[in-house]
Length: 517
Image (cartoon, rainbow, N blue to C red; front, top):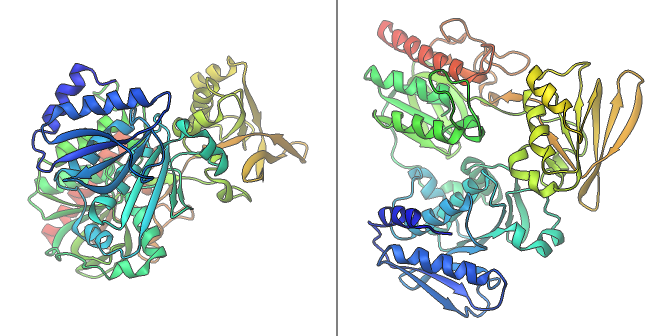
């Protein structure tokens, strides 16, 4: 699995390891254990500070496919059960590097919150090696374990533990259990994990809030293309700039194919986000990542309160908080997320191999999801609320050529039905006949567009009935000194290239405001 090129790259990554790290594999018999043992033995050859041992851990590890990380002979709470290939290879590399002293890229306020946890927390993270959202959760919780000895994490490859998957009714990844109970399902970032932890254990909010930032000229809320463009343009003007974001990249990070960014014929979301970060790092920009904005207090100097409790005083604000997946809002949807209701066909599609599933939404995202899933599942039924599909004609034509894709138009989803913790059907209304019908299904993928992330702006600036921030041609809101750009605004056509332009425009408008005031 580890070819010479990968091993050579690993030598470069591990060159600065400062602690002795041992990969300890549980002894026992399993048909894939020899493959895992070779993987770990090869991995350990890249540094003198890396070692591999096979040992009976006395029940500390789950199975012969489980290994833990020891630092200077002491377990650090990180366990992998399975062969960390695919997207999880990076998770293992980072776990080793962070265990050996590589600095954690977490804000000081987050480190303080996690270090302040007093309870024993045992996380189990069920993943698929093809899931591109899973590593974010694995890497976040692994960092929590490194920060606090009371926290442990175990990453399990769901494909190697079918009996556990069946026992716990897991139908989506990532699925996170905390102390034996479901803690989180589906795509979730560090900011959301922190909020859940703080809700479960309120005492962690008593942690030190870190060093107070000086007064900022511009504070940007959101780290997608619009926010990063605004930050770069502001920094180039010599301003003190801070970005607050739950995650750098936003929705773009989840986009697998991008072919309409002018001058770049083809790229992916992760590649584009990497380039955005690289460009942003050319400038002195303060990044407060994995945090959310709780509230904004207006005035000549505005105050932003973060989810960590930290406050930022700033002369201007640029809102670039983007959008999130829109939910159906019907009975049975929220209750069955991770048990048959999903939003990411790339991550959760493999769980429905050979089964009948539905895609709700006939726009580009819905038809693209149907085409992706058609190669995995037995059949796909597309449910579209309108009399006609909204997707591009080229996508509609491709879907019509697939024998296992069926399209129902002019239908309204009414209820997700489930039995024994698993989705069994979708109840829908035929708007033409007004007949209520039921389609037997194993899974439902919701693809009905996006909602603006503007909840924290209620009673701060003018919003439309759909939650979009009302802006003029200069990205100005109705409040002096507060600007907005990108998908969160009323600007039509939610496209990456448009968001970048709007972010640049917002920064120039904020700079003009600062000059005049």
